[in-house]
Image 1: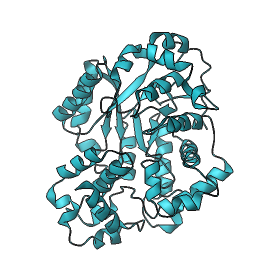
Image 2: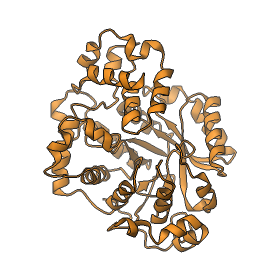
Image 3: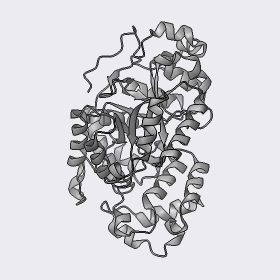
Image 4: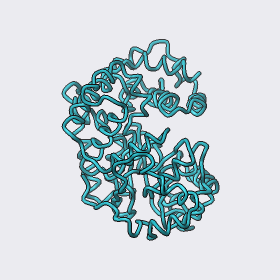
Length: 408
């Protein structure tokens, strides 16, 4: 899967030993003897990868928001040394734990949701202040580009990064994208502006890996996979998001999905492991991140780092893609381009995923309320044009009405 070898328990990627780390952080030390062995993990040796030209030596599993402080402690004790979206975590957000850790023992990024220079600086500074850290390694422009040409035309956030880097507050320019991803991703790689790029990678993105013959949408999955390979060739670090297509709650919403995959993947844990193995098997993908809601899920993610896609998992992923492929939105934007100035389908269905899949109903409703009135579901008397324009044939109208009920 990866050429990098598992950590041997000696020097951690940040430069200190695990033993020193455990001594330095009382919470982690107290939990360390229990950590993954307490959770019943069969494989507790973390693997590390180098994220392209950044030189960041990151754990294959990238930490993100969790729902229990002790989950953060267990993850740190298990060797997770990279943390995504710091400064934006919902409570409990134990930033004091990270302030106790030697700063060279971990990496982190924060997301910046603006292409305006001053606004981007404001967002970053707020996150930095909230964490109380000296610096945040990655300045990550988060899904702000709507077309490939905007990469070169809207450079305010990049200017913000350059200013903050000179001040010693950040080090690497990063991007994450989940709207019109194929086009924006390709342009970002060609620009060579970004040190690390995070994009959705799962069995229905890139562009229906297993079921592309059902759809005529261009660019097809081969081009998306080629962009990932091209980025690796340019020494740009590629990490995966949306590996779970939301969360386990999302899978329950897809008609017949669990029934269809049960022969090969009988439990939610089996599905989760297969999704992780599938993602890490994509050439060029170095690491992945997921939001986690329980110790069981933490154990699942850590253990999956040590395995590879099995024959049963591969068969299960084919069934998974066949079910989810005809129901879940890829946020490709094709329906919006066919109906310009109308409903913000990608954003609305993403907010709906935040509501249920990420269990953040208040955030989801707040984001929906910020949309211009003409872009909301209630502004459209007829949603059939959006459904007709969907290259995947998903029930766009049904999903939008469902989202409207949740978000209003």
